[in-house]
Image 1 (cartoon, rainbow, N blue to C red):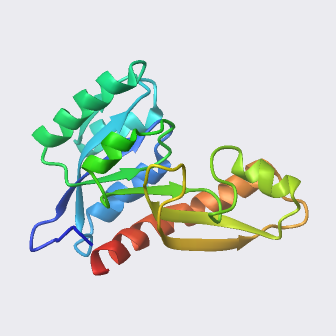
Image 2 (image 1 turned 180 degrees about the vertical axis):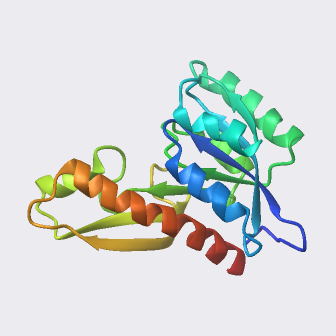
Amino acid sequence: MVLSTGYSKVKTAVFISGTGSNLKSLIKFSKNNKSPITIELIFSNNAKAKGLNYSKIYNIKKKVLNFRNKNLSENKLLSILKINNIEMICLAGFMKILSKNFIKRFKGKILNIHPSLLPKYKGLNTHERALNNKEKYSGCTVHFVNSQLDSGKIILQKKIKISKNETITSLAKKILVQEHKLYPKAIIKVFNL
């Protein structure tokens, strides 16, 4: 891994678009002595994202850019990340696709969590697709981000059994509980690679 913790924690930004439940679990994890990261910045493309409230609760800087002009927003974002000495990015329900150029600037330093057992069900509506295909299992995956959607090297996965009367909502809830446990484990694994 390109990242080295030395003695200080690695300055990390978390990108969100919604409620920020994974963000919350990452913040709690970052406060732990064993955690190799410190969360210095919360970024969203959605000014109404509920997860932005965690910036007040935990006293973490936040930034919002609407991504209407992707190039402009990404350039602004890159300079914000530079000013804040951000070394690593965790995507947590971030609903925008980052450009190849952006990803290249943080090569091997952007992680994402996805609610399926990749390479199955990349993209959106993962639970619905898993149920429609009568899958017996689903789960979640933490992976490195590359320029292809949900295609980067897999770091960790957690498999869960789909029960007989599973709904999209019940499956989503079950998987989210596992996401909150998996993301911190994957981060620890990355720093031990």
